[in-house]
Image 1 (tube, one colour):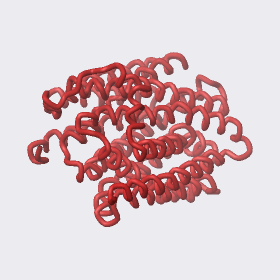
Image 2: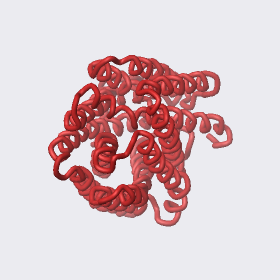
Image 3: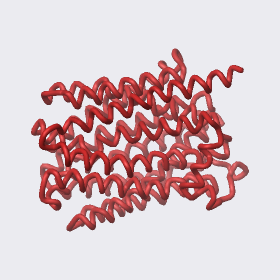
Image 4: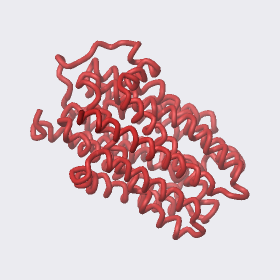
Length: 403
């Protein structure tokens, strides 16, 4: 399948990534403050923010392999469109939430509907040859970053007006995404390449069996877990820590998160392709993990808001790791198993997304009075461990392929 034939599809997939992540990024600067208003204290806000992220990840753990397998059976187009419509309704529910329990229900629905990312990645695998998938995933990652740039900026500004306004804006953007896809998106998976739906593969534990089908695939899945685990420090601690330690307002938080998105977009759109071409997937992946670790450690040790902001620059290079990790994994399964693989990967990320927010939320609650930056240092150590494992596993895979 030529890229020319599918250029409108690629454009739509990137637009979906931008708009969906924009819709989610809009609420990041304001959601912790809203939770704090319901919870009543800084420490309780850290605890409850961790729970909210864990609920979202728990639903992704359960639903990602199901949605991935459904897309293998019925196609990517209906899967993506139905999920996007559901996300629109979820933001409306969140906008109307009067207490923490409503927010929890909203995060539950959001976790289910946003599991369509499995179909998005599988769509990209459908329309790109194996040797170009690192670049393709880099483009998707760059689109995510672009959405993450605009979302917090809009959310920070709207949050100054009303804590509910960002949710309504997110609902509108998700609705636009659905209508756009309804008229633009073609199907990428021909009927002859579809796989019968099976609950054995669709349940999260059944999907994880695929990751045990090859020794290197299992090792790379563990690296994926560590990467997700470490970076949930951003979803749980970043906003609360920056507001508490450096006195940042929602608007300034929005600008800082937008800067993080800009840097990651530059890395994924501009650096992944050339760096992979020169050094290969393996070295690029390990380098990204090492630089991400250094960035997180710098954030935890930064005594001022300026140095905390500057630490975002080396940290952004972690974005080299995700597309190359994905690329290495897709080469170890068949074309008909790409949706299942993405579902399994999302399940791994969701397991990390359940455990990590609870851990970092608890850690922030315990250390907010004395050493709130400890969470970033722990995350840096976890990412460093991932770099060591990635170097070992990918080298063994390279030796096996050369034999």
